[in-house]
Image 1: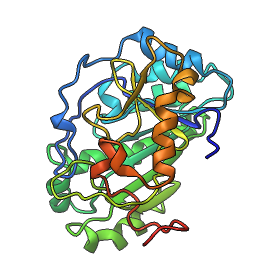
Image 2: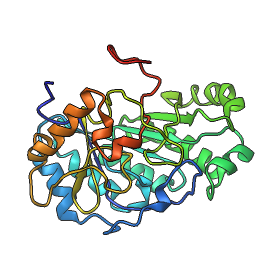
Image 3: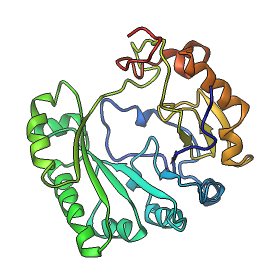
Length: 282
């Protein structure tokens, strides 16, 4: 199987933590160290890949805005004219000051995960956050680029769940008039969650994407919360050495053939179970 010579997307876990406790997310189970990625580590990831047209995502299994260095990290990335930066956020910490800092730093896309259209439903799926504060923050942020004369794409998302499906139409109607995009996105099961059973299909998640923990380890997948599929460490290797290294290539070959059982992480993963792949059973 011919693999891309470089990643298209790089996710960097600059910090571990979140200000919400959502029932579908295992973030609170993470106990890896260090909590904060050293500056030398995140700068090396970026420096190793300058000029390659990479889209960077300075978050992984965390709320991006927990890291107070975020605007500085975005600005460092954007010193490369070929680079793009995007984040996902629950919006709770995005006050006007931080919003303007991110826009001035050059952020390209901000995706907001709300998952509800009423405070009652929101309280069940985004535990610990204030619905009205989040909605106000997002609406204010959407208006900021015009003031700062810098463009930024905004996207508001709702995960397709039984608990909020009755609100999807209102959600799309409201946010499609305000944000650049309003989407309903599927809920993925995290590998190794209780009851998750492997499907024998290829995986496209790792084909163009690369993921780094706070300690510099590169892992195969963004859903790997426990380091079950490490492929290298940027503190001792370059990003491209890891990307083209033997560990990642071996994993990629297995996944191209749907042989998930040969990789510990993937041996209990059902990602893309509903996607059709030629030569594989649906």
